[in-house]
Length: 349
Image (cartoon, rainbow, N blue to C red; front, side, top):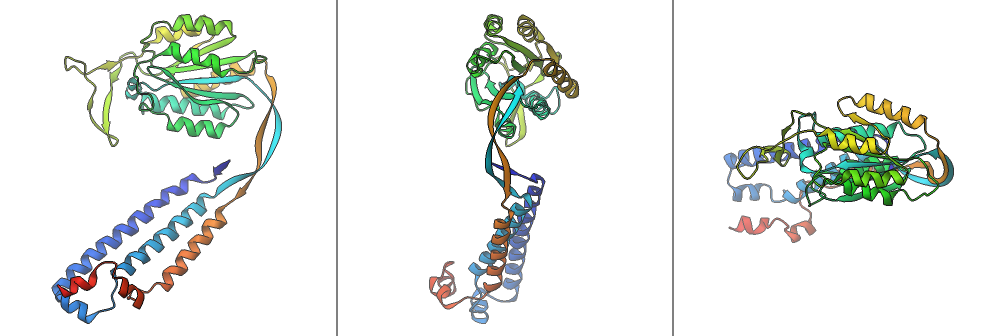
């Protein structure tokens, strides 16, 4: 297991991009000025040992050095010791709707991103509880099995998107049925399913699935994401909106929040329905609910110690800087024989 201590330093990768851009601009400017000064043939005679390959090699060394220094600042850590600890908690499964309607931006920044934010904030407030994640659209897909690894849960959550399930729709019943497979501990009495969706159910048998879940001791809490006035479903190419989804008649499809199904499945199992508008209120509500529940004690293994790995990357950075110093821009005999950029033939022509 590993963790990254300071992800913010990844922003410094822009330095490498700027460095390469400056090099290419400078290279273009030099070439232009050299052509104004003399012909290619004359330049080759005046500076027979100039090497284009060495220039690119030095750029690569500097770029790799910066990359290694940035990774060193991020400080990757690797788990070094495992220990068994006892925890008390309940089992919570999050069912995240990843249908195309979740791309609607009637709630900022979008329904899907808002849903991820809510789940992430709830996870941050958990203690010894075990969690699992299901993604669903036209059918349900197990994204993360029951675990106490909250870091892994957040990572899997960030990877969830509307392209991961090809069959479209909002199959709430399918998500509820899969939850029955998630709760593997028969002694765990407190089982919670949190459905996060815009409620546009296309199967119409979610209530029947909720009744079965209730018989297994599962309480369903639902969070409605979106607005009743609704919004269009954007179509994006490389992150840019290129249009909006249309029906067969060519009209822009407007997707709206449908609370009815979400309320019904929650009420059927003794749970609550909540609106996604206030994330802080949702997190506070869950904290209160969990504090009143009986916790089951269980054993789990976890990494107790993490060892810093920044020194390896710092060492590589120093190595690349040293190599850059020793790589001269002029050609050496062996490089002249290789003629990697076919410069000899260019001069002959």
